[in-house]
Length: 429
Ligand SMILES: *[C@@H]1O[C@H](CO)[C@@H](O)[C@H](O)[C@H]1NC(C)=O
Ligand SMILES: *[C@@H]1O[C@H](CO)[C@@H](O)[C@H](O)[C@H]1NC(C)=O
Ligand SMILES: *[C@@H]1O[C@H](CO)[C@@H](O)[C@H](O)[C@H]1NC(C)=O
Ligand SMILES: *[C@@H]1O[C@H](CO)[C@@H](O)[C@H](O)[C@H]1NC(C)=O
Image (tube, rainbow, N blue to C red; front, side):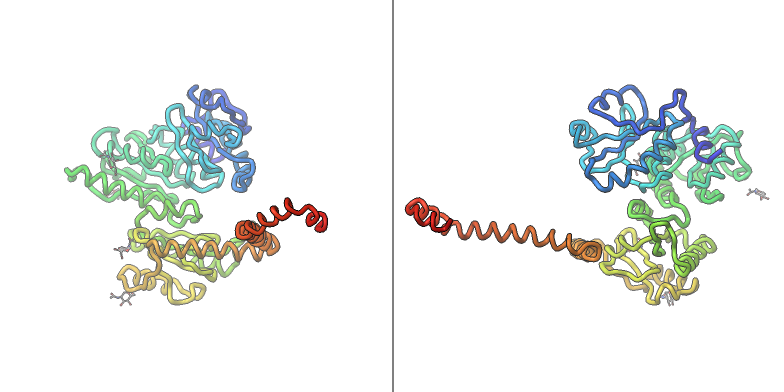
């Protein structure tokens, strides 16, 4: 049984009347249909949009993966049904939305099958799923996903706070609650109520005694902060899409950047480099985890744009998620040992490492310009003829228009000439 179906069973999402694994092509009747009470995962697309085409095969796999659930997967052509697109505020394409009869939510995460299916599962259920048997906890642990779990009775301030946070972060994380009868051995010494996050087979507890708190707002803020920091794996793959989320952790984000080709191969020396960074956070989690969120990236596009230069790979970069300043090591990352990476991180913490960039208007304009320039360079490498055509054609038009405007007097004069003097016209022919 695949982990996916275990999760399904457990979430109670197995359908009673199964839908086909096909992607349903939606029409202007959809606003009526959604009121029938179904759960929908819908892709709004335009036939000509490149990103939509790239999403097409993935979308079929998503439909397949959700075929045994009561979540229906559809797609809607916004060029044919602009009114429907308008109603769902699908102004750009492609847009992915989870749609319930009374609510809808736009997906902003990674465009991978696993991430989208997880998202659909989360959105389909209540914000907090209750676990009723020990077996389910074991299954969840084996599934190897990050999830939060509340231990204790579903009442009181902590529960209220947990529930609101779960409601806020439902699109991004799994939230569970468990009652005393189903405690796994991980919780035998647990006080009640208590809060844990599960990551890579280990439960980490929210280190606090809730009883002593009388200031609820403060407790709310600190728990929210904790959940927000803890909802990422220890060493996740960072993509253009999830970087935004990871930066919300409020920590320093440490990125090991390597070069992954189209079939996900990474050169050995870069795997070695990434391994060093990963070893550091896994072995010394207690030291670095409070301040740093680690991760790795498979290509340099985003970082090139952030740093406004083409970086050599492998690369090590630390981003301050509150100011968007960044830090880079003085040494060549490829040559760095675990110890020198540690010194680099310590210097960031004691504020002796120089910082660059930031998020000021000036930097952002420079960044846009750099992206534009880099786009042109890439295009030149890929297809110089096309670039020439794109740039020379408008210029030609421009020259023609300018000529037409500036010389209109002369043309008028010519016209008059023509009218006045028929012979001139004939001569010209
Ligand atoms: C906790 O704070 C969030 C905003 O940070 C707020 O939306 C929510 O209502 C608060 N929850 C409680 C139970 O006070
Ligand atoms: C629970 O507490 C006992 C006694 O303090 C200790 O020996 C045991 O290792 C603890 N179990 C866990 C899972 O922490
Ligand atoms: C980011 O930079 C600011 C200003 O220099 C600093 O106060 C803060 O501690 C830094 N780190 C994080 C994780 O925000
Ligand atoms: C900051 O940390 C580095 C690396 O551990 C150390 O060499 C340096 O002396 C520290 N500077 C300050 C001002 O503490």
